[in-house]
Length: 221
Image (cartoon, rainbow, N blue to C red; front, side, top):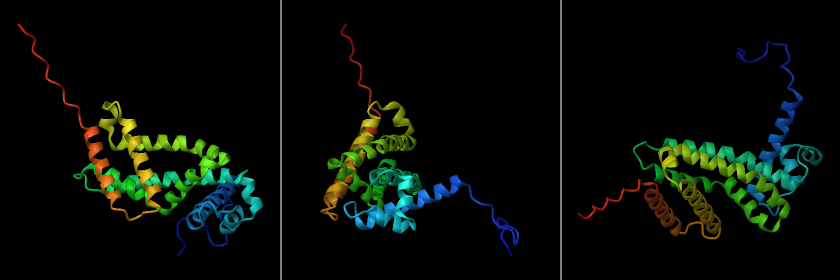
């Protein structure tokens, strides 16, 4: 029996619009770029390989992206929302009775262990000596950073509205974990990482705790 969404027998499905075909091709290229980054790394990635994995010609690739750097930045931009969605799902799956700060830090570390996100970090490192790549990533990183802070405000709404240094603490946590991941490329099983995460969790708990009011001094008679 045909499904309800299938067209009647003998009738062709509706033709996709040019915009739909363009978006499908673009998505294939971005997914192929991410998989190539993960498997080969930035140094060995070529547009020829990306086009091959996407099942397209190199000419079709450059129809959508003017430069290799633009393609790489677009791939990172394509990846970030997926990572954020999975991160929120992971934090939300933790029991509500558990420490929300600890869950947020642990899931942040888990997110940075994903091969595709580590491949994205590799691009950021490479951008130090690649002005074109740096400029392309800069255009993507700003909105992504804003999304990360938005997620943090969703997870800790009360603290976000009352703590004057909330955004600075969030930025510190992001940079601490990302820095540890970069260093962990050479020492992935270093037990110091767990100690760092525990210290970061304790720091954030303290930072997000309400500041007790100081007792007022009694005036002398």
